[in-house]
Amino acid sequence: MTDKLKNLRDTIALPGISRRGFLGTASAAAMTVAGANLMFAGKANAQEPVKGGTLKMGLGGGQSSDSLDPALAANSVTFHVLRTFGETLVDVSPDGSLDMRIAEEIESSPDAKTWRFKIRQGVEFHNGEMVTPEDVLATLERHSDEESQSGALGIMQGIESMSIDGDWLVVNLDTANADLPYLFSDYHLQIQPGGGRDNPADGIGAGAYKIVSHEAGVRYTFEKHENYWDDTRGHYDGVEFLIINDSTARMAALQSGQVHIANLVEPKVASLLSRAPNINVTNVASRGHYVFIMHCDTAPFDNKDLRLALKYAINRQEMVDKILQGYGTIGNDTPINAAYPLFSGKLEQRNYDIEKAAEHYKASGHDGSPIVLKVADGAFPGAVDAAALFQQSAAAAGIPLEIQRVPNDGYWSEVWNKEPFCASYWGGRPVQDQMYSTAYLSTADWNDTRFSNEAFDALLLEARAELDEEKRIGLYDQMAEILHDEGGVICPMFNDFVEGMSTKVQGWVADGGQDTMNGLAPHKTWLVG
Image 1: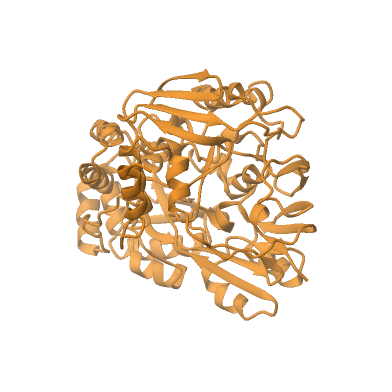
Image 2: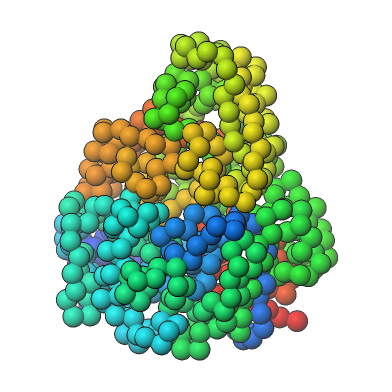
């Protein structure tokens, strides 16, 4: 062992060393990401999974227009469907490390502008074909095409070229990006045969379960993929998703035993549900956040003073107390919180301020007509109640907020990213670059606030290329300040992921990546009794 690698090994034992810090040191030693993760891994006590049975999950957030095309996934249900039948190049583990999936090894040039991903051999698609580097390349190319309308388009735009070199996918970037492997964990980037170009909604993936039947907005069934390559995942014979958008009905299905797991448990019922027999309620702090989004290019929200008026007119602490009831923390009109590794916390907290809200509202010159906020129960747990609180606090500042309650079905296709002011949620992303690139880069397909700021875009590209961590933190601080003051996102709170489950479900691991173990409950849990 070289002295440099010995020092890396010894570094693991130092108090306070983060996995990100260790990976940075490993990069300097020209070590592969896979090797760094293996060196960092500690001993863990593991239960022996029980094979067989059918897992049934009650999911909120689906609609009748949902597609199996990974590019178009835009809600909680489509996220879970993709995670169940699909496989990405990498996953992000609960501890923030990379979990090698279709890629079994990753290498980077010293300047982080050229990345190489070794494609795992022996991985089979559900149609019997083997996954090839060409399938991976075609998948990434499709999501780089604006016509695909992919939710991953923003994170693909820094790629200059991609090619195949034997078993390796080679990615060349316009500017350096030390976070590129994390970006490829995006759930839209499920590897498809031929990249999904011929039929992107055929539901063919390489995951642990293959789709048997699907009725969008109603029910999905899956069966175990017999030739799945990873025997540490996929313990069930089958999986069933029942789409139950009504929260009360979803909790009733859990209590009656109709489903084993229910997502999106409203905090106001979590305590009561936890006292029900044979039910466990879990929560985990997350990067997820509940938001009200304004289109910065649409009147009256194209007026900065009006946007600031609404930001000062929301009582964040009241909303956290009454809507989250302890299952989350206060937000500050950016999508980044302390769960992100390069978060500094230097941005001054914006508080409820009636005088400032009234001052900015007057400065906006708004004509006093109702400002319409569209909301549905499915926008996020407690969304309608949160909108009512917003309306009350805004009224105290003389701001005429009108709440329009709309149906859950069609919300994510007809309201979100189309209406100029609505409620929404984000599950967050593993790293800041991915969150900003997905939702705030001016050219991103999922820029749901229509935020366009040249200085912000330039800082994002500069931060990608900056390999000095302290300098990168400084750049992200500047971006947060711009978004905080200029942007169209009102972020009152960061939510815990709260789920209810039968005591028969075993193998549960807290994961703040997304709800229900970052969508991997069907892969990593099992049933007993």
